[in-house]
Length: 250
Image (cartoon, rainbow, N blue to C red; front, side):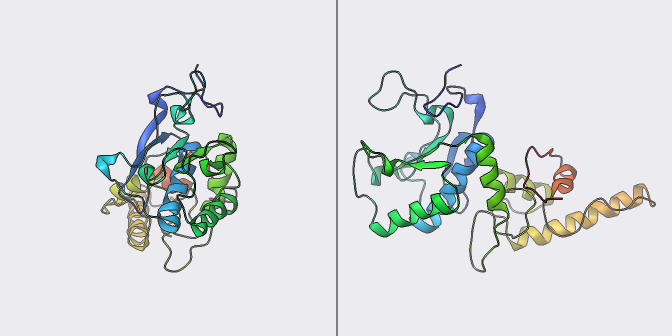
Protein backbone atom coordinates (compact mmCIF):
# COMPACT_ATOMS: atom_id res chain seq x y z
CA UNK A 1 0.00 0.00 0.00
CA UNK A 2 1.18 3.52 -0.80
CA UNK A 3 2.25 5.57 2.20
CA UNK A 4 2.68 9.29 2.71
CA UNK A 5 5.86 10.90 3.99
CA UNK A 6 4.86 10.35 7.63
CA UNK A 7 4.21 6.63 7.11
CA UNK A 8 0.40 6.64 7.07
CA UNK A 9 -1.42 4.58 4.40
CA UNK A 10 -2.27 6.90 1.51
CA UNK A 11 -4.32 7.33 -1.66
CA UNK A 12 -7.40 5.63 -0.21
CA UNK A 13 -10.47 7.83 -0.06
CA UNK A 14 -12.24 5.29 2.16
CA UNK A 15 -9.87 6.29 4.99
CA UNK A 16 -11.00 9.95 5.08
CA UNK A 17 -14.18 11.95 5.56
CA UNK A 18 -15.24 15.59 5.33
CA UNK A 19 -15.86 17.08 8.75
CA UNK A 20 -16.41 20.58 10.15
CA UNK A 21 -13.88 22.72 11.98
CA UNK A 22 -15.76 23.86 15.08
CA UNK A 23 -16.61 27.54 15.23
CA UNK A 24 -16.03 28.10 11.50
CA UNK A 25 -17.89 27.48 8.25
CA UNK A 26 -15.06 25.29 6.98
CA UNK A 27 -15.15 21.56 6.36
CA UNK A 28 -11.95 19.60 5.77
CA UNK A 29 -11.40 16.10 4.43
CA UNK A 30 -9.09 14.43 6.93
CA UNK A 31 -8.21 10.95 8.07
CA UNK A 32 -10.81 9.10 10.14
CA UNK A 33 -9.77 8.52 13.74
CA UNK A 34 -7.31 10.25 16.08
CA UNK A 35 -4.90 11.55 13.40
CA UNK A 36 -7.65 13.48 11.64
CA UNK A 37 -9.27 14.50 14.91
CA UNK A 38 -6.15 16.29 16.13
CA UNK A 39 -5.98 18.27 12.88
CA UNK A 40 -9.57 19.42 13.32
CA UNK A 41 -8.82 20.22 16.95
CA UNK A 42 -5.89 22.39 15.87
CA UNK A 43 -7.98 24.03 13.14
CA UNK A 44 -10.57 25.11 15.72
CA UNK A 45 -7.87 26.68 17.90
CA UNK A 46 -6.23 28.34 14.90
CA UNK A 47 -9.58 29.84 13.91
CA UNK A 48 -10.17 31.18 17.40
CA UNK A 49 -6.69 32.23 18.52
CA UNK A 50 -4.55 32.86 15.43
CA UNK A 51 -6.80 34.09 12.63
CA UNK A 52 -10.29 33.26 11.37
CA UNK A 53 -10.47 30.61 8.69
CA UNK A 54 -13.31 30.88 6.21
CA UNK A 55 -14.92 28.99 3.38
CA UNK A 56 -13.69 31.51 0.81
CA UNK A 57 -13.41 31.00 -2.92
CA UNK A 58 -16.07 28.29 -2.89
CA UNK A 59 -14.11 26.22 -0.41
CA UNK A 60 -10.70 26.57 -2.07
CA UNK A 61 -8.98 28.49 0.74
CA UNK A 62 -8.61 25.49 3.06
CA UNK A 63 -7.37 22.11 1.94
CA UNK A 64 -7.19 18.59 3.36
CA UNK A 65 -7.03 15.24 1.57
CA UNK A 66 -5.34 15.25 -1.85
CA UNK A 67 -3.71 12.36 -3.70
CA UNK A 68 -0.47 13.96 -4.81
CA UNK A 69 3.29 13.96 -4.24
CA UNK A 70 5.09 16.63 -2.22
CA UNK A 71 5.44 19.79 -4.28
CA UNK A 72 8.70 19.52 -6.18
CA UNK A 73 9.02 15.75 -5.64
CA UNK A 74 8.12 12.99 -8.10
CA UNK A 75 8.17 10.07 -5.69
CA UNK A 76 7.45 11.09 -2.06
CA UNK A 77 3.74 11.29 -1.34
CA UNK A 78 2.46 14.36 0.48
CA UNK A 79 0.89 13.85 3.89
CA UNK A 80 -2.25 15.27 2.29
CA UNK A 81 -2.48 11.92 0.46
CA UNK A 82 -3.17 10.14 3.75
CA UNK A 83 -5.52 12.81 5.12
CA UNK A 84 -2.97 13.77 7.78
CA UNK A 85 -2.28 17.34 6.65
CA UNK A 86 -4.32 20.52 6.26
CA UNK A 87 -3.67 23.91 4.68
CA UNK A 88 -5.42 26.89 6.28
CA UNK A 89 -6.14 30.20 4.52
CA UNK A 90 -3.84 29.08 1.71
CA UNK A 91 -3.99 32.28 -0.42
CA UNK A 92 -2.79 34.37 2.55
CA UNK A 93 0.16 32.05 3.19
CA UNK A 94 1.49 30.88 -0.19
CA UNK A 95 4.03 28.10 -0.50
CA UNK A 96 7.58 29.41 -0.12
CA UNK A 97 6.58 32.75 1.40
CA UNK A 98 8.02 33.86 4.74
CA UNK A 99 6.56 36.22 7.33
CA UNK A 100 2.92 35.79 6.30
CA UNK A 101 1.98 35.68 10.00
CA UNK A 102 2.77 38.41 12.52
CA UNK A 103 5.34 37.62 15.24
CA UNK A 104 2.49 37.40 17.76
CA UNK A 105 0.64 34.91 15.56
CA UNK A 106 3.78 32.81 15.18
CA UNK A 107 4.20 32.69 18.95
CA UNK A 108 0.57 31.62 19.33
CA UNK A 109 0.88 28.86 16.71
CA UNK A 110 3.97 27.44 18.39
CA UNK A 111 2.41 27.70 21.84
CA UNK A 112 -0.73 25.84 20.76
CA UNK A 113 1.28 23.07 19.10
CA UNK A 114 3.61 22.68 22.08
CA UNK A 115 1.15 23.09 24.95
CA UNK A 116 -1.99 21.45 23.55
CA UNK A 117 -0.67 18.97 20.99
CA UNK A 118 2.61 17.75 22.49
CA UNK A 119 4.45 17.88 19.18
CA UNK A 120 2.19 15.48 17.22
CA UNK A 121 1.53 18.25 14.66
CA UNK A 122 4.28 20.05 12.73
CA UNK A 123 3.88 23.51 11.20
CA UNK A 124 5.26 24.13 7.72
CA UNK A 125 6.50 27.51 8.87
CA UNK A 126 9.13 25.67 10.91
CA UNK A 127 10.55 23.76 7.94
CA UNK A 128 14.30 24.16 7.61
CA UNK A 129 14.14 24.62 3.86
CA UNK A 130 11.24 25.96 1.82
CA UNK A 131 8.59 27.36 4.15
CA UNK A 132 4.94 26.38 3.89
CA UNK A 133 3.16 28.58 6.41
CA UNK A 134 -0.36 27.45 5.43
CA UNK A 135 0.52 23.84 6.23
CA UNK A 136 -0.03 21.68 9.34
CA UNK A 137 0.71 17.94 9.34
CA UNK A 138 0.58 14.99 11.72
CA UNK A 139 3.99 13.66 12.72
CA UNK A 140 2.86 11.46 15.63
CA UNK A 141 1.40 7.97 15.64
CA UNK A 142 -2.32 7.34 15.99
CA UNK A 143 -1.72 6.20 19.58
CA UNK A 144 0.09 9.49 20.33
CA UNK A 145 -2.74 11.44 18.71
CA UNK A 146 -5.28 9.56 20.83
CA UNK A 147 -3.36 10.46 23.99
CA UNK A 148 -3.41 14.12 22.97
CA UNK A 149 -7.17 13.97 22.40
CA UNK A 150 -7.62 12.37 25.80
CA UNK A 151 -5.66 15.19 27.40
CA UNK A 152 -7.69 17.83 25.55
CA UNK A 153 -10.93 16.20 26.64
CA UNK A 154 -9.94 16.64 30.27
CA UNK A 155 -9.03 20.31 30.02
CA UNK A 156 -11.12 22.57 32.24
CA UNK A 157 -13.37 24.92 30.34
CA UNK A 158 -12.70 28.60 30.93
CA UNK A 159 -15.80 30.81 31.21
CA UNK A 160 -16.50 32.56 27.92
CA UNK A 161 -14.20 30.25 25.96
CA UNK A 162 -15.27 28.27 22.90
CA UNK A 163 -12.55 25.65 23.17
CA UNK A 164 -12.92 22.50 21.14
CA UNK A 165 -13.99 20.55 24.22
CA UNK A 166 -16.02 23.20 26.03
CA UNK A 167 -17.21 21.16 29.01
CA UNK A 168 -14.83 20.11 31.74
CA UNK A 169 -15.83 16.47 32.12
CA UNK A 170 -16.52 15.09 28.67
CA UNK A 171 -15.84 11.39 28.97
CA UNK A 172 -14.81 11.15 25.33
CA UNK A 173 -13.38 13.74 22.94
CA UNK A 174 -16.23 15.41 21.09
CA UNK A 175 -15.64 17.43 17.97
CA UNK A 176 -17.33 18.25 14.72
CA UNK A 177 -19.28 15.32 13.35
CA UNK A 178 -19.43 13.60 16.76
CA UNK A 179 -21.20 16.58 18.31
CA UNK A 180 -23.55 16.83 15.33
CA UNK A 181 -24.38 13.13 15.70
CA UNK A 182 -25.30 13.57 19.38
CA UNK A 183 -27.30 16.73 18.69
CA UNK A 184 -29.37 15.02 16.00
CA UNK A 185 -30.03 12.04 18.25
CA UNK A 186 -31.30 14.21 21.11
CA UNK A 187 -33.21 16.76 19.01
CA UNK A 188 -30.90 19.79 19.14
CA UNK A 189 -30.12 21.99 16.15
CA UNK A 190 -26.85 20.46 14.86
CA UNK A 191 -24.27 23.24 14.99
CA UNK A 192 -21.26 21.10 16.02
CA UNK A 193 -20.69 23.00 19.28
CA UNK A 194 -21.10 21.12 22.56
CA UNK A 195 -22.37 23.96 24.73
CA UNK A 196 -24.89 24.53 27.54
CA UNK A 197 -27.98 24.03 25.36
CA UNK A 198 -26.77 20.64 24.17
CA UNK A 199 -25.71 19.63 27.69
CA UNK A 200 -29.14 20.53 29.14
CA UNK A 201 -30.95 18.68 26.37
CA UNK A 202 -28.71 15.65 26.86
CA UNK A 203 -29.62 15.54 30.57
CA UNK A 204 -33.30 15.45 29.60
CA UNK A 205 -32.59 12.72 27.05
CA UNK A 206 -30.69 10.66 29.65
CA UNK A 207 -33.57 10.98 32.14
CA UNK A 208 -36.06 9.92 29.46
CA UNK A 209 -33.84 6.98 28.52
CA UNK A 210 -33.72 5.86 32.15
CA UNK A 211 -37.49 6.17 32.45
CA UNK A 212 -37.91 3.97 29.40
CA UNK A 213 -35.64 1.36 30.95
CA UNK A 214 -37.61 1.44 34.21
CA UNK A 215 -40.87 0.94 32.35
CA UNK A 216 -39.36 -2.06 30.56
CA UNK A 217 -37.94 -3.51 33.78
CA UNK A 218 -38.95 -1.76 37.05
CA UNK A 219 -36.31 -3.65 39.01
CA UNK A 220 -33.42 -2.57 36.82
CA UNK A 221 -31.36 0.42 37.93
CA UNK A 222 -30.84 3.21 35.36
CA UNK A 223 -27.73 2.71 33.26
CA UNK A 224 -27.06 6.39 32.72
CA UNK A 225 -26.24 9.32 34.96
CA UNK A 226 -28.41 12.25 33.93
CA UNK A 227 -25.41 14.57 33.99
CA UNK A 228 -25.16 15.88 30.42
CA UNK A 229 -21.87 14.04 29.92
CA UNK A 230 -21.38 11.87 26.86
CA UNK A 231 -19.70 8.97 28.61
CA UNK A 232 -19.16 5.43 27.39
CA UNK A 233 -22.65 4.24 28.45
CA UNK A 234 -24.32 7.30 26.91
CA UNK A 235 -22.45 6.72 23.65
CA UNK A 236 -23.71 3.14 23.60
CA UNK A 237 -27.27 4.24 24.36
CA UNK A 238 -26.97 6.62 21.39
CA UNK A 239 -25.93 3.70 19.19
CA UNK A 240 -22.15 4.20 19.08
CA UNK A 241 -19.44 1.84 20.33
CA UNK A 242 -16.52 4.05 21.44
CA UNK A 243 -13.10 3.08 20.06
CA UNK A 244 -10.90 5.06 22.44
CA UNK A 245 -11.30 7.00 25.66
CA UNK A 246 -9.20 8.88 28.24
CA UNK A 247 -8.13 7.23 31.46
CA UNK A 248 -10.58 7.59 34.32
CA UNK A 249 -13.70 7.92 32.16
CA UNK A 250 -16.88 6.11 32.98
